[in-house]
Image (tube, rainbow, N blue to C red; front, top):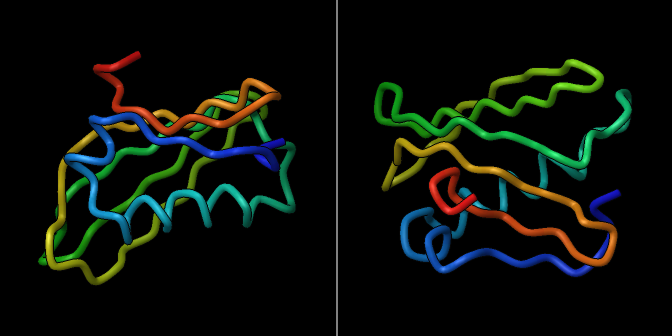
Length: 95
C-alpha cells in the first residue's frame, strides 16, 4: 500500500511546507510493524517553535507523534488516501 504514484492537491501545495509533506510521506513509508490502513490522517500543529505531526489510522488503530524543527509550523488536518492506482495527500477541507 502507498507504493504507487503520489499526488498532492493544490491546497496542500499552497499551505503545507514541502519538508512537512515529505515528512508525512516518510512516516507512511516507515509503517512496518502495523498493518497499513489506506486512509491516513495527520494532525499538524505548532508546538514551541516546532512542527508537531500526529499520524493516525483507524484499522488497525494506530497513532504516533513526531516533533521536528520547522521555519513555518502550520495547523492543519491532512488526509492521505491510497486508491490502489495512486495516493493523494489533501487537506481535510478538500475531502
